[in-house]
Image 1 (cartoon, rainbow, N blue to C red):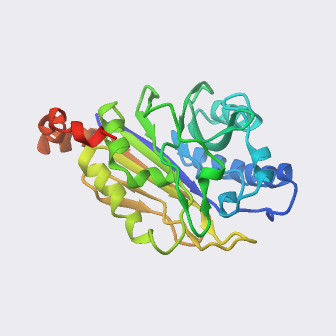
Image 2: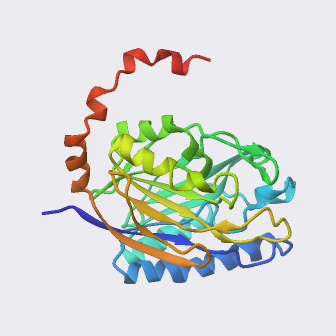
Image 3: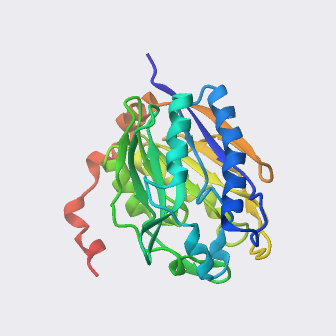
Length: 289
């Protein structure tokens, strides 16, 4: 019998203006997503992933210490506690990207992974941190991730997480495959322009090179007062052959739901033996400083 796993991706525009109190901004986005989580659960999803730093705007468009106060501990902060309750309520795994504080002055761009029974399974910290003008000042806010490329076993699927800018680097995508990931989720905040043509190029290539499913999420809308560009949505699912088989709209909030047949992984890997034929003994120069 096929191993079919129904998954959902939630893309959403920011709600509260960026000049409102931080608690108000975060509550507005969390409340919005609670309805979308119910929609995903009502549709039969077993795994749902939210967008990068889902509970607010993409504040990295400016460099302001105010946003440090938006960070919270993982897993002991209020957002992860609430999402653990939601996972238990709906018997649905949830990937929750938030701004994490480890200790004062040490912050990460993090995604927590919660099992369907509400168990906190662990987290991934964004590894590759951009600092690109205009508007992507992430090194001001985040340390590079230091947890490697963990894979989380849900019992019915093994999942990994890559976050936004990570997608430009094939090394971590390969590590996730070698670590056993069957689905790699990439929560993002990316705008139209320079990298848009790569959105449907790089990640399907990761799917092909590693023989797994990709679930790519991007927020929507234009966020004032920064207006660094249009977050263009188009979240999608891609199979191990690199074929996009479900795609969300460009401009609207949406819960994108699709069935992933994990038996396709074995089918593809029996044809394309990339893991068998790779030559790690020849790649030493790639990791030399």
